[in-house]
Image 1 (cartoon, helix red, strand yellow):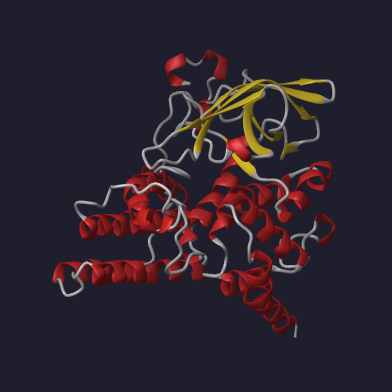
Image 2 (cartoon, rainbow, N blue to C red):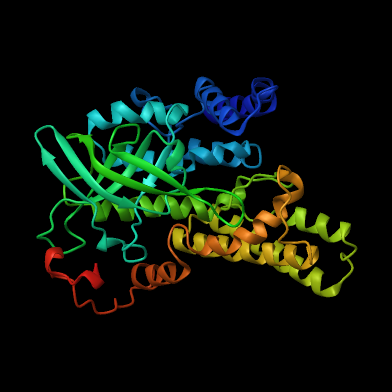
Length: 393
């Protein structure tokens, strides 16, 4: 009975309510805010979140039903909320203090707050545990200073998931704490980084004695690495199934979403190449890959497998689009998302292998945590962070 009722609500929302609400709304950010608020008001945001936090208090099966019925119907502007909805809020819900959850979860579900992820640093990328941003407790607040880089959406975010070092006397993995950092305060400067796609998705973030309420710790103090692993699992799930949320014909500049196979078929037809045996072979391979991704998602596979398949699918589709569009494939037409979308995907596809952990990191994770293979020896495993040479940080 509950499933039937939820199914009707979801179909009514996407079939009737959402088109009416978004009609006449212009601008990517404004459309994103309106869409998320409408979803919240319809009682479909945070399906498996507690009601006291703004959710619906339902179970995982209800969430899976929503995911299935909303696939291909979610506006592309929803990507703005990907870090908050797909990664940060689940970890805050599961591991944050009651004070923190009450302060940020409802606003995140409704789309009032946009989130970013302050992880990577100039000297800490794949070796994230070498981060040097520091946080010191001062009375009822944490004082944070440091620099982050490659931060998506920092220029329009209200909240951030932050990793900072709280104990330099501990080994590098053990002296890290996860925080929620309010972004709109003195002491935080954001500088966008322009990409060859013409976008400025990534940013440098400079933090100079920014302040965080004492209770805004996720998990325990100095247990941030475990929290980071938990969040990265959500991120890999998010990126691994991202292609399931798009639909043929959707022209979103979302680097996480591979080109739908039907769009590649249409491109091949328009270029007069649909009868080319090599092109048809590539299309068949990509169609098979899309079906494998769907199967992996339904089976709830290891997130690193989903991430690897998603990047493989994204690269393959972009490379085929480049071949079909040659020599104009990498060209960029300013102001025309539809005409330039294939070009964007061609230029952006290599980055799919980096965001959320490189392909090599994913394979290491699978080997060590899924297959039980031994870890590579680490010479600095039990060395206090303060004693590490700067080149190892």
